[in-house]
Amino acid sequence: MEALDGNAIAGQLFEYFGREMTTAVGTCAHCGAPGTLAELVVYVRAPGAVVRCRHCGDVVMVLVSARGTMRVAMDDFHLLDPAGGRPDASA
Amino acid sequence: MARAALPGRLTWQLATVVEVIEETARTKSIVLEPPAWQGHQAGQHVDVRLTAEDGYQAERSYSIASGPEDGHLVLTVERLDDGEVSPYLVDELRAGDELELRGPIGGYFVWKESLGGPLLLVAGGSGVVPFRSILHHWAAARSAAAVRLLYSSRSLDEVIFRDELMRLGTDGQVDIRFTLTRSWPEDWEGYRGRIDQELLHEVAWPPQQRPLIYICGPSGFVETAASALVHEGHEPTRIRTERFGPTGT
Image (cartoon, rainbow over all chains, first blue to last red):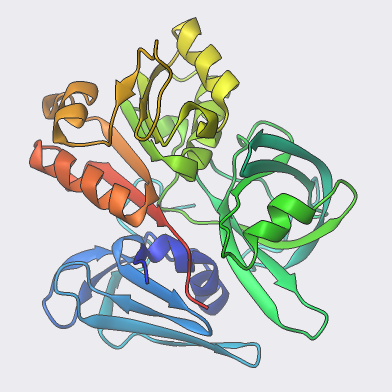
């Protein structure tokens, strides 16, 4: 399956967090690499998505949608700056 | 498209299809009228949801092809033959139909006039769609940023927005370069072959000029272009990427 990126789950993340999240900055709990959510490697496979660190490849987040409810496990991606450090982060 | 949606919420709504325009044999632009649209930024996308009679739902993301100032919402969709959603959108959807969508979505792969340039846009296939929105915004805002589009397609017949892009390029407003990877006319004066280090070296401004770079296309295309540009010395923080592709079911 082709790897996408965090832009592909922007809608689900917005649904879960109630705000735009792809510009949010965090670090991988496995290797410490920093990055925006948009830059993470995403494998979309119904009914959810597996999100991996672009640097070390370890799983940092899992999204599961079941019976109309979205569950997000992101213990391995530490959010540093939910608003993002980008100049357009207000989007 | 006047009433604002509730802030902080992303709600599904039924948009009316106003028009369907054939762009290429496999690609159509769908002009939509959503009942509540808060406006969008160039580069954003929407999620589209189809529901079957038995309740089964399939959801996909599509880039917005219209500019924020255009006054209508346009999605340009390429048919993936084994796709769950795109064959319906491209082959079946007609003016007057309704389409369920939510958006606009995304804050990373966006460009607004205040971000400036020089602006380098690198597109593979239907990766050109968000760049049409950016080019429309660039023109509407009368941006002083220099802009260059490098667009890779399999053949001339598969170039989406061909007439519009050719016109923009001929006017000299935007520096538009095409590369064709599979077939080209005998008198083709554009580039031939896939995007690689050499081509990007030729087309991109030097890293010293700190261009703001957007790359959109299939995953492999984006990886190749992004790695080549970083290797060339461009700052990774000035490169924004968006990958698309078929998703598993």
